[in-house]
Image: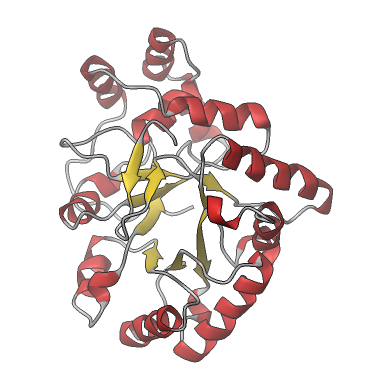
Length: 288
């Protein structure tokens, strides 16, 4: 088991770093490497695998299904339903398609991928029906801000929501102002997608910043590992974030696993906070 873990609302103990599958299943020439990467991650204890029907239009779920062959009991599977499939009738169909692609009997946590025009009561009814049918074990949401979460919790069975998956990294800290504290109060984990920032200028800016490089040198690790360690750091005497970076190269997966052993010092945190300050007011939810 990974050295830094969190307890999921259903009691499952999970590593604070999982495996993302964004962009997997899109290039057939990469399929073998993607399957091997997920299996290597399982070998190293990264048991949470996050996917979605949107990723590769089902292709990522198929990759996950192939990686899970003979290993279903080792993994905690999170998948997501398109908002336009969130009506009770269409959600059942979408879940069945995902289960076929994943080649499993039940999804551990099934998320609404982002806000939907379908009434919240109907969305939750769909999740409850799937849970009662044994097709999902729990449900959650993704890309909902603090106000949307507070409204969600007011609905019947809204309090059964197990997580909110949002964009979160050192360069995007808006969720810390109100959303993360709200989830923490309810003892709900927040899932952080793009914990290294999406590829491009911001990611390079983060990894090359003097603060990140300095902290990495102190610990003898890479800037990427510091960024991961920062996302899953303990806050207010509680670990409440699971990071889900995507990696295909085995060395990158090993680096992600090693990040679970990095404990940032108070001095590290101060230096990173100075370079990339925490929010001082509510901000719109970042998405990528």
